[in-house]
Length: 398
Image: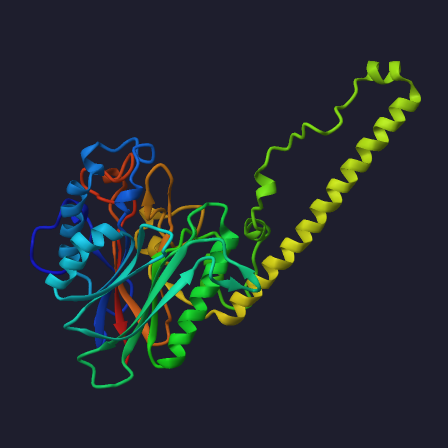
């Protein structure tokens, strides 16, 4: 933890869980935390929460107490409200000895930030990554408004010039059926990371964020599994783009209404035959169009998957074996990752700290809060966000 001080309510039962050799040559800590943009806080989203626990004047000191207590060397925050960056976070980082950068989409009121302990790291480069209507992936223009921020950090106390980190932070598209769009964004982020790693080839990658991706999604598999990746039928189906036409009601006021048997008998054989032919042709045309669209969308998905496999590197998740060190968080839905990092009306895992395992290893991770302190959901009187913070301690092998 940061310093010898009483833990805030959000950290009382959180402890370090060892994963590997605890005494590497160099170690550092990294946090990923969706802090919940105040402008997005609506009563309908958190009906279980008290009125005071949703107000910024209540959430602000609790968030800062948690950050002060954990005091990681590197912090990657998501959903940072621009107003609160200016009046709270930026000032706090400077006062606590951190360098910090924030980046947001022009279409949103919140963004992502990366901050670092200036006594341990020096920022030598950065890259802002747009994932909006100005960008294209595989010839298609994106229809999302998300961003990522990459900051390159050099160890100040290292005797080697090539000792450093490429740190990325992102918050991907939020809609549950947006797997196609999120994969587009992952490719954009990977290309930006590749660009920075070409400039700093000896630096290791740490990639944080709210990926809005569960561990059983295709996006997670394409980030973490060896090539070639075999996706199951469900993962591939979820990657198909959800077109507007699919969301429209099936009813069509202009379509011919089916006739009853008595109506068909009264109208005669010729009327019945004409009606049947008209309906059959209409259905055949609709089925043909659906099949053609499915074939086009399948090729679009294949192109994205192949691109991600070809351009992306295989990463590890710091919490990818969490269920092994804390079996109480084991779930049948997926292996390794915790049951939840988001605990609101919807409960599940969306947040990650990924890393390239060439020079890095995870020594320990911070345990998750016990579920009895989160029920029926957060924010509550102890936790200020609908997500919990993730913190990992890395070992750096020179």
